[in-house]
Length: 465
Image (cartoon, rainbow, N blue to C red; front, side, top):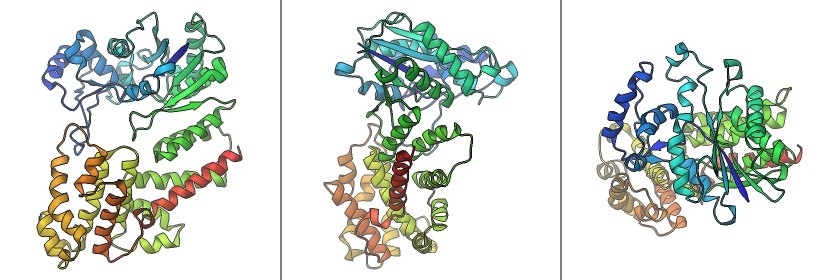
């Protein structure tokens, strides 16, 4: 027998890129009076890829769609985190029971609080219940709502019990576990899968503590990485929550999810009474650099790295250094399965370097004219010729593809057939322009050393805890 306990959060239900906006607007108008004069609209970043989904605060999503939910509306919905978890619950791991934890803070926030559209009240998930019922029944047809699938509501009674209060939240979750799970007939051989990433950090931590306290070694944690959707990580429980969190952090580090690692370690360190020691502070500083780099904030990354690394200080004086960082970021994005960003950053690395060569020479020029203006000897490089005549055209075509991007298409856009050839072509384009002779993009990037230092520091930290 297997049981899956899953928390829910503000981004669990999203709108697909091609959702029916007319339908949304019609249903939204019917309940708009309940939104405290707010105008909630589906949102995504202005420069987001065409296949990026839209988000809406969870309570709003449920209030608009749940009352009139049908198959047509359901087709517009996207469940990124839940879909990922379910990929890890196949075969013998398929759950016989599912416990879904919803949030409802209507007793926590006043009417005045709700006039702020950022108020956590709008992020509550209990209005999503009809949507989640339909989702789970489609994914697990043999399981029935309110029998095999239970929906438990975390409903604090006051602001002091809010879901951001770690101690009070732990009490709420403990009560929920002991009151609502008593009739599950859990045996020693029962597998307990716990997905706790959604919701507030306090909820996540409380679910970890409570599940370990109640089920001990039967627990396995299913966690996801935002840069590699579809591939959950299953982490077995141990006697110490800190050990579990460190293991989780190491797995996320392997996938270059520095923000995920930072979130986990910050939770660990919050439990300490004393200040961070030298080793912990080093990890924290390295993570801060890595997060800047991962967000393509190369200048801030370079400044921080230069303070402790003389080689970095020298390299960041070169005008070309950020182009190699962008190229290596493309390599990492490909490893994470984010093929669209891999193509974007690889192209950006070369184009950005060209445009930075001499600003007065390229005023509003396209790639063809830009290369001919900036590089008088461009014909000497086969790689630059391919970038100019082939890659630039492929980039424009692929960026408008709503169906997503396969890894092979990234390679083909550069007229290559493998990861190795693709990296070599990007590097040779940069080397031709900069007159450098790096052996690899990893060697050229300052970030590769930061990652190695971070990996060593976290491994050493684990051995000492």
